[in-house]
Image 1 (spheres, rainbow, N blue to C red):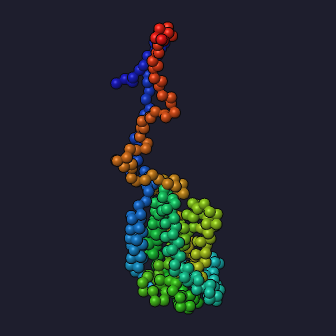
Image 2 (image 1 turned 30 degrees about the horizontal axis):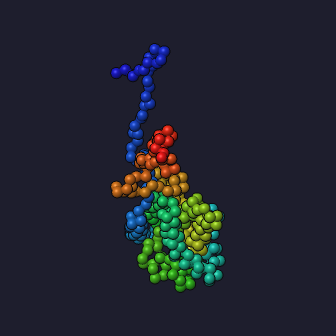
Image 3 (image 1 turned 180 degrees about the vertical axis):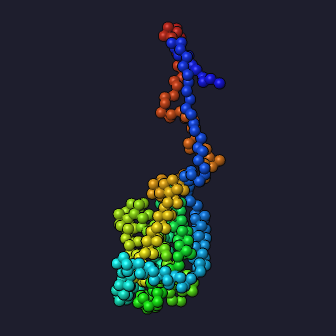
Length: 318
């Protein structure tokens, strides 16, 4: 069939060209997802199940004690070769200040969870459009860390044979690590690489720095992962190379979220429309609205009745 034509006022026929629409042939894995408003019950259930699964898998990984100790010796030797084996000096220096190391023990045991959950709640309430993408970063970071625990068992410095590191939880009788003291049988002690204390704290810090409006909150966001790095080294729970592994895991999580949503969390809109549309009982506010007459318009004047003429009034006068 030919293309439609129209006749111009001059009598010439001109072809009417319509825009050509190209259908989106990309597969479902290549289309960026549209952020939706999170549902509270679903998010609470998802976080609880995900953390339970993470703990179950992490602790189910075979400890492989001998392999973990050999890997620790290799990491320690590599840091010496690089001239950056500073963990033992930091561990001994901080351990000599009782109040400081005790505070770091409790920091290591609590803030890892408290701050992360706090940032998730803040995102849910203040940035619902960015919450799902940021949560995806955190979950993907944690998931790839489980692969590291399985493929590369690593003993923390405090468990190395004859290394001279101080287990600060045992030395000061504080509750500060799931892998020390009375809680050591509840956790895999040889899952030090990568460090999720760094992965999670860096996620919290970058999220606060990118999205918070209050300047001092943004500064705290930058300081939080730095202080966490000092804590994990001072308590002899990680090498600084474990922190590098945590950073790489976070980079992987950011890449997964960017591929899934087509942008990083801070590049997405802050809010999203509600999942529920307008109710059936009430008309939509965006629909057509009947125009009502303005109350300020003058009312139509009633036709005046002609009164009796002047001559007729004279005849009727007595």
